[in-house]
Image (cartoon, rainbow, N blue to C red; front, top):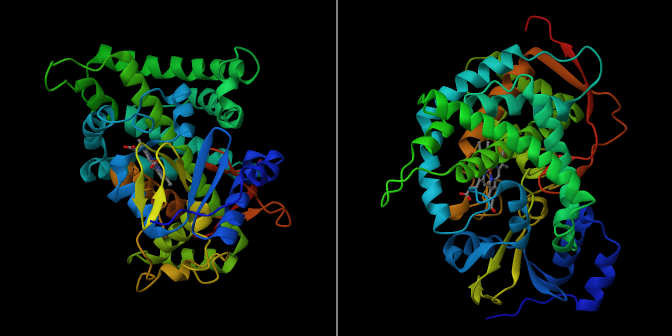
Length: 432
Ligand code: HEM
């Protein structure tokens, strides 16, 4: 077994000392270029491996998945998500996944598609320039609330949006190198964080209470959670567990898709010829391979989940490399998806690369939804939603950047959001 090479602790410290968290992908790219696809670096309290090799990623996420638990960063997310699907460990995770899974079956998604179409058709752009990211966050929040919890997020959407924004902007402090300390302090970021969390809790708990009262089975995620009974004890889930799962689906289920849509509009606005090609395809009533290609290419260049972390619970071999017990393995879609080794003209937006015969890629050279037992439960939901919103809105409007000379920068915090607003203008297409 080979020992992954990497910079020494002092060198790492010097490089990371003044590096904000958002520059972390740049650091990972440097380590990869200098030391190769499986490298190692450490801070005083922890060893990290940066695994940028598809075969080794497959070993970590699939073949040897039982040798890993979620990483420290995910554990910090428990402050918000409790023990929901994203943050829990076995055996609780397996049990809950089984309970929630039916809400994501093919027939259910076909039903949600109806709601997704209605919301797309009702969507109106503001007259003036508007922030596309904010618009997409609102749209996907409404869709997630309606489909998964049967709630019209109507007036609540603004409050939820503001609270989520607060939570997400505070997260770098909570997740950063001093996060463990920050989380213990009752003032500063944690105070704001707790306030925002209380707003979300209040909304989520009201949703749960309302459904319990009505006793209706709507076949959505909330109904699955309330109807679930323990196989041995026959007990229902308690309010805490229901709250954690609802909050998890709420957060995981709309921000990621909103980011994907925002980046797709951004890329299409930068490439009007490709936007035109998409519109031409949508005018026909045949299949829509270009639409899928645009989405694939968007998730390649701007993967909303841009990094995954796992901690090794015992020593593991991954693609011939020795990964030590207790170390954190980092895998980054953002870095690997832009690797020239797997993608020609890797930095360019070329949906065409996904047309015809699919590109010959090793498994896990492209993994926007992760893999193994922790693979995204909402991948088909997200894909269906993104296809519907993108095709329906692209057929009715042309979106242009208000200031094309100002590129949107990705902000790699939890998800890959744009940094600041992405200001656009919509013009209605005639004959749409
Ligand atoms: C483009 C949109 C999306 C992307 C890129 C995405 C990506 C991911 C990734 C990479 C993971 C794995 C995390 C890990 O291994 O540590 C994940 C997990 C998860 N996602 Fe998504 N996701 C998207 C949309 C959604 C939607 C729409 C929902 C729900 C409605 C959802 C719910 C979840 C849940 C519950 C998990 C945890 C699954 C488990 O551990 O069993 N996601 N997602």
